[in-house]
Length: 323
Image 1 (cartoon, rainbow, N blue to C red):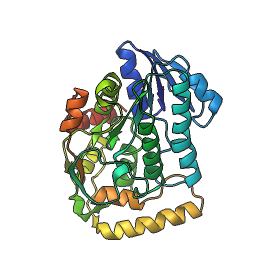
Image 2: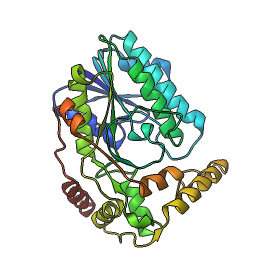
Image 3: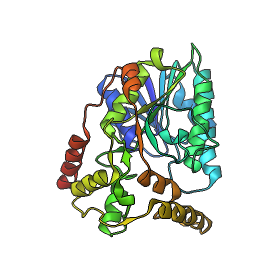
């Protein structure tokens, strides 16, 4: 199959592209900077550029769309331009080019209003209730993607939950940096039970989705390791792998959520670069349960995670030892 992977310069996108290459697929990657995936044809460009998107989709039979603006803060217009308008542009170009299948890589946050999630499946995306511009725009983009599904243009959404692994700068490096500087608190003693997804498992589930479109098109599926753990235990495991002390102090989750709301507003108004030390979304993720029923996902994808949380932490520790 000729497959286009957008956003392959990221941890998960690169993993997806490399897995497809190993399977013998003809892979093209498309993102703003070179992805460097051996065996793939690398195209650079922006999902906001009509001509670049048309060039990227030309000749593809399947597309896995990961390119997105992922951040806790930033201008709302930028999230809309990349996540919503970029997805709309890609879908339009893909249909015109005769692409058969599109896997839209989404997020469970598209259906999360901040309340605890315990053992549910893929609830409908709801941009009006989603917290933060990232979640809001990913929800709108997912609705656009699934609305485009038809018998001759099959579209499905896969929502991997909290992806991490060696080389991860979104979660692992931030956890280690803040823990090293003693700026990583536990919220409510780190008791919230959460699901996560080791990167190799997330990549294999997404690739499985492309091969199982006959069974899943028109719907969304949440993907995780299916091993819920207290967030404090997971953070301690990441810190141990990276050789830094685990967080040992706690603040009330309600206080962190309120502080996060204020901090992100002030951070954005000040035009500061990077990520703030706390946002409401981050506080919610660290203080409320969010784990998912994986039975339907595994049945429909004919898939199961190959790397356990403990094995993933061992691989993470090996990565840091090698460094």
